[in-house]
Structure formats: structure tokens, C-alpha cells
Image (cartoon, rainbow, N blue to C red; front, top):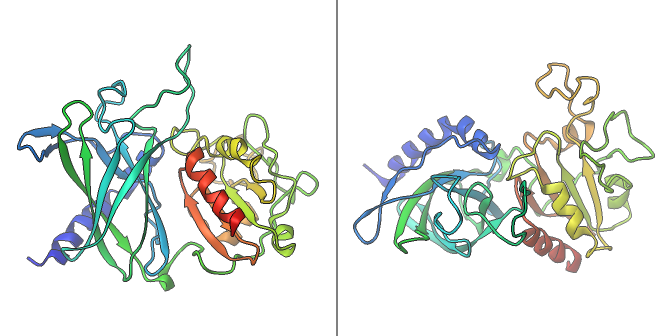
Length: 328
């Protein structure tokens, strides 16, 4: 059977499980770990690899792409010393199309900061639900690609392989704003002009990023970082801390206008019940055509979207992205 057909079949199996992938993004272990054949010939219990990007048409050909994936320990209760991969590990990723490698990447693991009950070393890390890897690549043509992922056991040092199929679409089929294109002038509510949004910020203490209207920032020709997120709803290890992470890094970039926009317009009306059929999307989210959150849009002084960071980011990745925007 041609490699493309095999890959397509694997992709359809994964696509059918996209609800499970969404659950994994929400912090619910939804795809079980299994045994992988190690390079040394023995079976190794490998971590689960999960897509941390929307299953909608968000990955496109011919543009720089950020493809976040999660590496989940088979036992989230394990201490980082025995979980796989190591805390300081990278993973080796080969991107394959129709059986042919098109890119080889070494991707560092990133750990989202998180809180603990009790006294714990604040600098420690976990190699479980808090870890993610963000691939950066440009793929020339649409198609079904395979990510051939090599991981290393933190205890034995053995390596094992896991695979993840991904679909890359033609840019004309995209269901999200694409990089290298003009960013739309979107009005975002502010403290002075709430624009009918009943909760400007659902963080337990409102963040400071509601003083500037994104449209005004674009009109003034200032670099813009627009984060669409609902802190009260997305409180998991992966996506929950994004507003706090942005607050921690923002002070180093005074020349960038930083704006946070909530996803929903009538949080109070539905008593914080996001399953209520009366829930309404905020006008800014409708204008952006977003089908997932959180999403961070980085827009340069010319009003061009230069980067989009979906679902999860840590302080290091955020600082690098903001520095690139500031310099640009």
C-alpha cells in the first residue's frame, strides 16, 4: 500500500479522536500510553503524544507554522526524576510526507509554570501534563504529514519512537487568521468602553490589559500583542496560566501594546455557566473568526500578523516572540 494511503488512514483515526484531543488540551488524559519498541530492542513505556492545536483548518502550507504538541507521562503522579522524557530533554522530530523526510527538528521541551499546595522548590519542573513542545517549520505543500517523534527514557536512557499525523491545508482553506497578512481592525472593550461586555476580565483579579483598544493600537502604528483567552474557563496546566504569563513578561516590552480580550460577552448573565445556551461570543472574537482559545496574535507596526501562538505558551517562548515583535 502506498505510504500516502497508510498515512491518510492513520490521520483519519486521529481525526476521529479529535474530541479526545480537545479533552487532552483541557487537561484530561484522553489517550492512553502504550509500549513502543525501543532502539535497543526492548519495549519501553512511552509517554503519550497529543496534538495541542485545534483540529480545525489552522495549519497551512507555505507559511511559517507553529505546531504545539504535548508529551504526557504515562503516570502523571511520577516524580520528574523518573518520568520520560528528562526535564532538560529535547525531542527529535522528523516531518515526513509520502514516506520522504522534508524537515528534521530538535525541539526543546517547555514547562508551564504552575502552583502547588504546600512548600515545594519553586524552580522544579514536571515532565507530565505541564510539558509541551512547539515545532516551528514551513511546509511547502498541502497534504497529510507524519511527525516521527523520538523520545528518551529519563531512567534507562533508551530511545523510543512515537508518531502523530497532521494535515496541512491550502491557505485558501484556512479557518483562522494567517501570518504574513494584514490584521483586521478589531475593537476590543476597555475599562472606559466595555462595549456591552459584562466581565472585561474573568481572572480572579482583573489583568491590566484592558486599557487599550486593539483598533486604536493598529491605527497608531504600534506593535500589538492581542491575547484572546478566558482565564476562568481555561484553568488547566496547559492553557490556564497564559494571562499570568503575559503579565510576568509584559514589563520588559513597554513599546508593545498588550491587549487581553475575553471570549464571551455575557458571563454574568449566565452565572459563569459556559454550557448555557444563552452564552454569547464577544464581538471581537466573532470578528476574528476564532473557534478555539486561547490565541495570541502578534502584529507589527505595519499592521501585519507576524505570529500566532495557539493554546499554550511558557514565559521563555513568550519572551522570545515579544522580543522578535519589538525588534521588527
